[in-house]
Length: 161
Image 1 (spheres, rainbow, N blue to C red):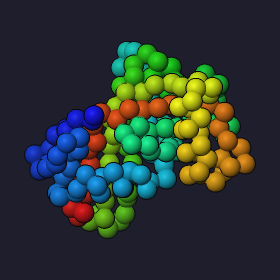
Image 2 (tube, one colour):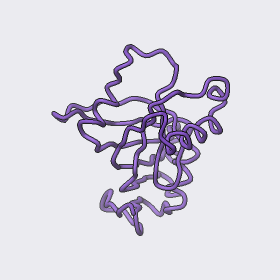
Image 3 (cartoon, rainbow, N blue to C red):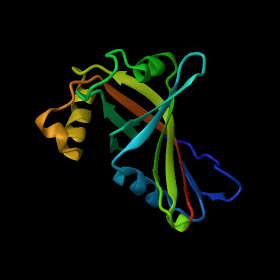
């Protein structure tokens, strides 16, 4: 079960959520689930950070993303090597607007796992990704799949909702 984290002096929350300015755990989760893209932060064994955008599917307190057919610089992806060396990760979704009262973010901190394409959990994750992103319907990701078990949810909203 994810833990409650303190995100700042104005934070309130219960259970596994840390929120600012009256953002409820339900709003936190819904904003994350509705986002179309996130940023995955990993670090190597020496603590050097690496940040990449990713598409994802949320199932309970697990976030899934897969290595897909989009062109990459290398088939040896740093995010996979980093998770193997240091499974602690963070995933961020946010909304920017020139009206700063509309700004918000949600962060999920957790532990990453690499799933081979032939694992049952991987098949379920890929099915969720295919259902969520239409480009995957023509060309489903072949894996591997990154599974992130969320230990802590944090959020902030300028407007408080």
